[in-house]
Length: 91
Length: 424
Image 1 (cartoon, rainbow over the protein chains, first blue to last red):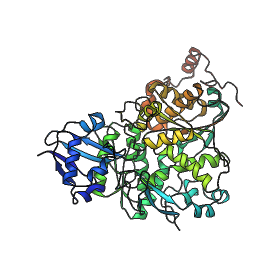
Image 2 (spheres, rainbow over the protein chains, first blue to last red):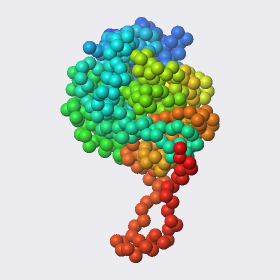
Image 3 (tube, rainbow over the protein chains, first blue to last red):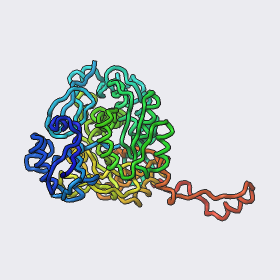
């Protein structure tokens, strides 16, 4: 159980090519730490040295941007879908 | 023969080969095309540019394509209108409107970025092009794809104006309306782009696509007689065009097309109902906090602007500023531009005109210096935005006495709804 995490192409080399992986944790911060344990190297791609989500990384929980929720402290339930999405130009 | 040597991450400097890539694998920063400016400087000249057809491809040395451009042969080189009646109304001396409401073939600035992106898609060998769009981009991708004989899928918010929807579907793409706002469309398209591997002009072709926006700046300078304006007001949605206009001015100096050493001040314009960049600018912050858009200016209703950070940087580096305006001010400004200059723009253009007015009234933009207002889209696509605010025609029978009676009942109409104080 845990969250289902959607992995974008540039990060799939950390997940052995998997598009979706699972990770445990009651908050996004904990999910990110758990991802790092299971797929070493991932956290550095998502977070800067201070541990904050990088400027061009968007994280969504069930389709909602975590910046509209509680950022890294956003609560995660079993089965939630977490998406990691690079920023996209306008249109 | 290409002047492009590779791609580089704007954040960490990691380099990549020329490929349909858009995100740095190290830090997720956006990738930017690297040019060999030394070589371009030797190839390019004002005379060479002036000898070419009036399209955005006259600046091809500074665009990331190899060989002959594939599409958009009539895109760009839109009018730079000396806007004396609007200038008189705003109380300024030298005002121009760079008018992409008449860009070919789909009446918005997007024909620039799409011309470059689809030329690049063809070079890369894609047979399917796609985009996430607030409307104008989908119109342009659909039209250029039809002309190039490519398969096309477009993704838009389901609640767009009819003009923007039909303005895509007429060209025969597969159109998908998403329940949600543009930011929802974007998130979905990011995953679709990953999965299906099409040429998404604003996703995996983004480094090439965004370069097309520079041509808006190149043209302003050329049309001013190879000089730079002092002030430029540009609308901000995702944040593509503003930093690229700044880059255009810098490149023209770098390759010797412009001698003028001054840097134009650049101002960002947003609708109050979607102003994440203005909030950060006014707070003095680098952090763009996303918003949920709520404005009639749907073409610039992007709550999570990918390049917002670079807009802030370009504005601050230039010594410019920015403002947000209400939907009411936007509608009034659409009418003002139409009734002084005969140019009908969409709410994004109304936003830019209203913000220009506000910045002039605030004294941020001096009244005696040269100013360019960027009009990036066409009002005929967004009739809904002004529908309740303009007069409907009087309806009479086809009889002279009916008209006589009507005419007598009306006060004699003014020559112009907006008097032109003193024209210079």
